[in-house]
Structures are given as C-alpha cells and as structure tokens.
Length: 249
Image 1 (cartoon, rainbow, N blue to C red):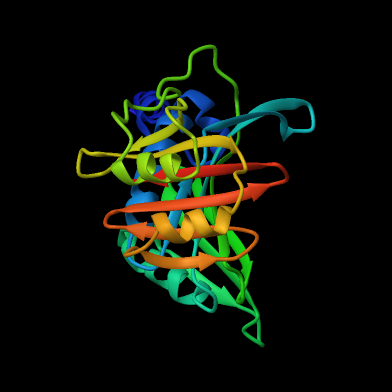
Image 2: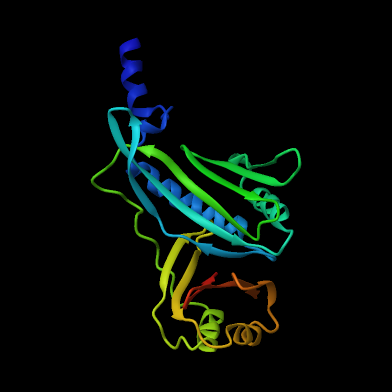
C-alpha cells in the first residue's frame, strides 16, 4: 500500500519547491497574477503602465543547474505624498489569499511591498515614501526551462481608448502604431497598456495642459505627466528628444 501511495504522491501532490514546477507551469500562473494585480491597482489617484513579459535566462537553480525566471512589472504613478496610500489600496484590493503586506522602516521613509500569488509567484516592490513612481514586480523565481511555454502571448487588447488617440493628436503623433501589453482580468475582460514613442514636440507642457483639461491630474513636472480620463490612465514621459506616451485601460 505504501508503494502505491508513493506513486500517487509523485503525480498528484503540490510542488513544495519552485524547481518542481518548470517555466511552462510558471508563465500562465504569472500572467494570471498580473491580471489580478492590475485590477487591484486600477483606481482613482493612480496611473498605470503594464510592462511586457520577461523571460530571463542564466539564473541558478543549483550551482550546477541553470534555469529561467519569468517576470513582469506594473508601474504605478501617484501624486506626491501618496505612495503609502496607493500601496495600501493595492494590498487591500488583492485577494486575501495573496496575504499582501506593506512594511516600512522605523522612520517611515522607506516602504516595502510583498504579496504571494501562490505557486511560488511573488509580487514585490520597494520605494521611498516620497516616491511618485512605484514599481511592483511579479516574478516566478528561477525555474527549469521548457521547450514550449503556454501563456507567453498576451491576449488581444482591441482598439486603444479615446484618451490615447486624443493625447497622440495633441502631441502630433498622428496614427503611429502602438506597442501593446495586455493581460486577462479576473472578470474575463482584458487590461492593456498602449504605448508609442514620439519626437518631443515644441511646448510639450502647454499641449499636455490642453489635452488633460478636465481630467484628474496626478503629476505634471519635467520628468512625467500622469492623469486619469475616466477609466483610462495616461502617462507621458520625456526622454531626451523623444517622449513616450502610454494609455492603460
């Protein structure tokens, strides 16, 4: 009887360490967790940018065995002084099973965020309490590689929102084709970020003031503009002679 139990255990027990679940198992789970995270993070006072899926090789499972890490970032723009409040709201929006925690140092100047999405998928972030940009990183940890990785391709996001077209027109971007990052939401919908890099136009600040009129402005300085127009968040980041425009819905 013990022999039969051992055979059942090998095929049916949950993995107890990450290396028992390869990257083919990890990617769909990480993508699902990304959809849960962006849903929890979406809300008033926050503008979002969803990063792409990363598969990072040459990590070490053991000193003699290499593997692959799956990771994905969610960047959250917040008003000055709102970092803690934003992270608390995101933690509260995650499922109880994620056991999301927000910690700080004794002086309250540094914040740390952690959530456990299950199956060895973690969500982590660190920031100064004064930060206006927060990065939450989903990671699988180092896993054995696989020849086939289901879930590697993002779902179809459809057409970009009107707020994206409006800011492109205001900045002279015309009909530039966007780069799209997307994940499935828990409710069956799709959350996506549409991004385009443009030449920085003259009077960038003036153009952005005009197109964001009536929106909820979260940030407007030389490093970034961020605002919410209804259920769409818009982030514009100058970078030398270029400007990167992202809308997320």
